[in-house]
Amino acid sequence: MDQMREIVDLVGSVLGPEAIGMYLHGSSVLGGLKPASDVDVLVVSRRRMNGRERRVLLDGLLEISGSGSPGRPRPVELTVVVQSEVRPWRFPPNGDFLYGEWLRDEFEAEGPPQPEPMPDLALLLTMVLSGNHAVSGPPPAEVLDHVPHADLVRASVSGIPGLLDDLESDTRNVVLTLARVWTTLATGEIRPKDAAADWALARLPPEQRPVLEYARKLYLTCRYCEENWSRELKAQVRPHADAVLTEIDRLVRRSGM
Image (tube, rainbow, N blue to C red):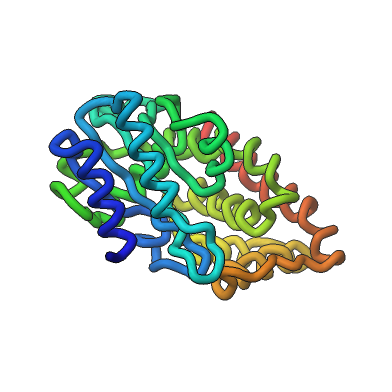
């Protein structure tokens, strides 16, 4: 049974008819899955899950989601949102459940995720609407409201402190995500990470390009390998991030936020 079928069956067993629809987002709808891409899924539900349902869903995802190592399935990122929390749209939205492989250790120690504000849902729902890929249920435009650009800006900026906390430990992903934040604020579009990197590279001075060029190369070619940043490149990571943050800040100030 393929991984997507397992996800569909798991969600169906937990939520049944309470699941309005399931939708792909992320790399699946933004240019196609890359070697290290997660399988990104949004579930829109009619109600919040109870404790038992959260436990069953988490246990199933811990089995289905891969670690990104050879011979394992792709990592899964699965978000459940209650429709009434996002339609009519308001910011910040609340999410009912978020599973990501980077949270595995936390879930195994502390139990299932609980409802919480999720500003990133503004970006996620925009990708779902743009990608228009229903795994089950009606088209996303029949289920979700459009997210205003101002809320895309707020959601993009709200995640920056957390990104910077991970700059040393998750350099490739953070560098690419900062490029995508910059691109989104400037163009109003959420582009694939490699396409956002191309856009940013064309606007960076030559001395600020090597870090992003290497992160882009890793994203396109490396699934299981170590990032292996050279000492020279590693020393350039923070100056590169600061240069991109300066551009992001300029756009935020221009937007009046």
